[in-house]
Length: 530
Image (cartoon, rainbow, N blue to C red; front, side, top):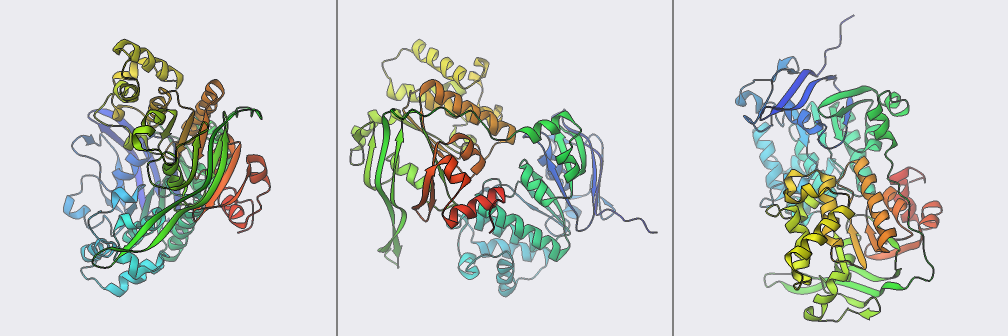
């Protein structure tokens, strides 16, 4: 009987960065049509392993002390750039985590896919490109082909990335965190699409993810990495149901849970929103005349009490972030917004400025929201300089250290820059920057979606602890329904800018009434029929 030959075989792969070990002795193989998932926390070596396959690491900073990477029997280690370019994109394609940073913002979708066709097939056919966009289930492919990346939603951009990867008809597809930044329903659609396309073209799939549920749904074999080493591997069901290594057991146990603050029915109202509306003008024609309006938020109303968390869920484009920006008075809106009993909806910017320290926001990606040119101390101090100018330098330093301590950061980190911190540490700095102003309201816009599972749990526990200690009120925006359920007391569900369902967290998650809410829960938990 002829032995089956692997499509890709990696043996004893090691990578050093400036002489320091990043991964050591990583070995595995993948056959045609097979799916392997590599899981682990940030810094475990998942992406370094994937980038090594295509020799995309920043050489000469990155070096391979030893190891072998064979594709279709050909050794890729040390292969000349001209030979590698015949494999990259054509035989082995890669889908990256953030399509907005992977796609060229200056070129249309058509031009970017055309470039792939010309590079790997030597010819370009518009009809073939449209067929490809239809294949990845992109609505209105002709219109989307003429669009730029910023004009597409997150799910549409990821579909374009998949189309570009398929243009070369690869035998191996590497997907590096392809759904991390997407909402639950879009995530489910993209994963289903990738799986269907894999079967259709008999591609092998190497999936890099920190989402354990994604790995379990997609792969038959799983590899668990920690600190550059493979700590466990095998059949996905066996590893998930009976992990043998302590680290794997730790990963499986990291559910996004926390001890919620108890509700006080007599607590005063911190925020009252009534009939909030946000609309953006639609401009057409050569002179860009306003020909209509797009209603991003339509008639949203809710009340938030002191010490309470309001969860806000919905797909991308549902109006979650737009609503938050309107509440913060960062975009124009109509309706009533009352903070601590004072109407702020019509206040001028000069009158709003003293109130801004009472409501702060923590963004999704701390690496993007923290200045790379400022130290941790300068980042946390910035709000004090603006809102408390009479404080002395020493007084500010005391408050900075108190804020760092409150979010569980060591004082020694105050002189570091954001790039020298982990993802969880950066998010704690962002929380400290908001807390130092002693706000009454904290808006959390996807604060855990870009973090590892264990770090998500840590951040949620931190937020719950801070809420109990400081009686903070949260608006928690997230597409991670498990995190919303863990932290929120009440939840509103947005669709098309409108509230389609609202209620207590327990009622909404245990007995959702609206079909759209049931659809969201099905995508996240597989509880209800689609």
